[in-house]
Image 1: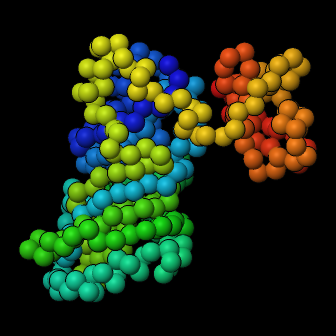
Image 2: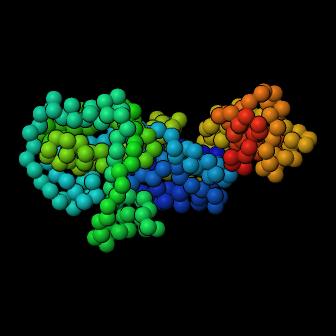
Image 3: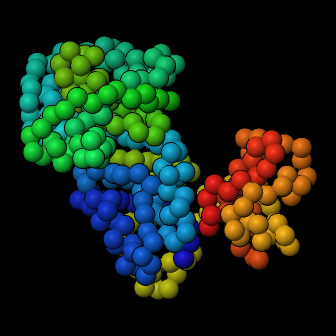
Length: 296
């Protein structure tokens, strides 16, 4: 099996748990996810199967959309409500001020947002994951990284909980926990993240995501292949069909002449190179050749 399944990860599972379950359900060892979701979070988690695992980084780099609860007046060591409370402050629940603080993170207002990743994250520094250090009580300096908040809006206010819900469309590498913390700092009262749901990851929507129990039932009925999206549908680049000498070159991952696409330049373009009734690889063009990026 080669392709991607749109999985709905429920709370309580790690992303690695989901990979292990899909590995058993699909009966294949080559399985990988396209962007970690915390155990307490739910939502879209695309899972790659077979040769499609080679495309995990491509899919993980897509924009994502989240619905997140922001709880004012407290800060935690993890940046979300599962952590230890490290600070409490009084809250002036001023909806206009909250709205201004939230919208200040929009790309149209701020441009790129320099975000410091939380200690409880899988980022490696000095060969060690931050969360491993955090569990030992270690806190180290982390460099701020540029991320983009393409869109952000308040979905609803919950004044009796000193909380509100936001919808965020953001670039790869954005930590919603850090965003919640930074919103709290902008308001001067601190904040932490409550519930989190990822509703979109690239082309994958929560509307079409399948829960693990549903996937097991479908697999038991022998219909799992119906849910697997092929790589050319996920990354809809033009397809080139090659034969003869060019087919031999492609199978060995060698560059191809521009004559296979009959154009003077292919700079900045990508193509699926196909032959022998299968996709051979993803090729990227420049002014002289097509060169293999990923062999399938």
